[in-house]
Image 1 (cartoon, rainbow, N blue to C red):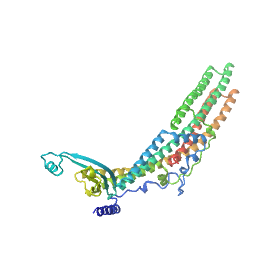
Image 2 (image 1 turned 30 degrees about the horizontal axis):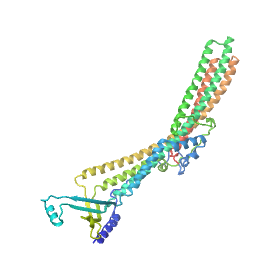
Image 3 (image 1 turned 90 degrees about the vertical axis):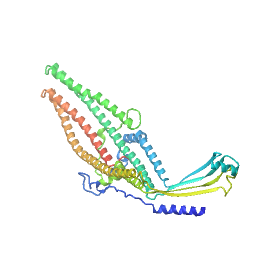
Image 4 (image 1 turned 60 degrees about the horizontal axis):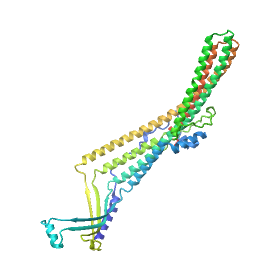
Length: 472
């Protein structure tokens, strides 16, 4: 008889496993969410992109590589993201066991003392000649829920998508850290260049002030010329502590990103010696799903939402649960393990259909569907933002190159104007104001040129990040 019951349970287990199905239909990632090409990009089917480069190959300055290495290894936010991945992996592993029968071992012992006037008490006294009844059991119990409607499968799929999503979150965080560290480094180089420009301009102002002093002594200019030249010198001099302050603040910010306490940062390169790359390979917009972690995360969020719809939909249908128990049982310890007389076994199976709480479960199902529609819209929005960021970075790269060309020509012109103004002023053919104005214009233009160079480098980094580069 027991063998017959066991065979029935096994056949039922296999049969239900084969007939199990998913009662909800998943929504796929919308294909029309992507444009054919980026704005102002040449029409091409070339899928190669600079984002395919590892960051160690995209950046060539060894100082940046060392800083990014430190940030990837020690940044606290990245460490937290790694722990989140570990937690998600545990949850996914746990979900794999949801369709495995739950088996428990048990050992029970009990004693009861019925009333002498009760039916049980009187019969117990007559049958056994004692006033209490002992009961001893040992065995195993089994409980298994059949995945008829694909609920457990959906739970597993949702947990797996959440695990992958946690990995994408870390990748997105790393792309931002790589971009911020490299931008911070180039910002330091710009501040170094501007500090050098300010110091050179102070020296130039000192030289001009000496000439004006000589002309004042000779009675060729008034004290107003001395005062204005001094004001010009002080204007350049006050930039020095301001730039030194900004350098220290930027170094502190890089220290936080690299997981260290505030300290100075080594930089062997000079801003003027760095070549701005011409990054033309951007690929096609649809490749952003595989390259940009935030877009991929939004796609995985849709899969999680699909799984939740499947789970809540399955909750509306009957649940088949099979339970079984077996072991040894006796009311006397001496015959507890008397085999086979003490053996016992029970098998039960039943369907449970939600009734009074069906309204609540259907509401949860409707909420899950609405959440899935939100996930589709969030995916579309993430693509929209990603494509926009790429287009912004592309136009910045293009237009900053033209701005730098005009600004370089302006600096060359002003440098020549300074030489001519000083020469004319020494020979009395130019006013001191012309010299001071030329110096002020040169200072401003050189500072702007250093800033434009830094903006060009940042624009290339932003294009690399916007395309999904930095996590490899």
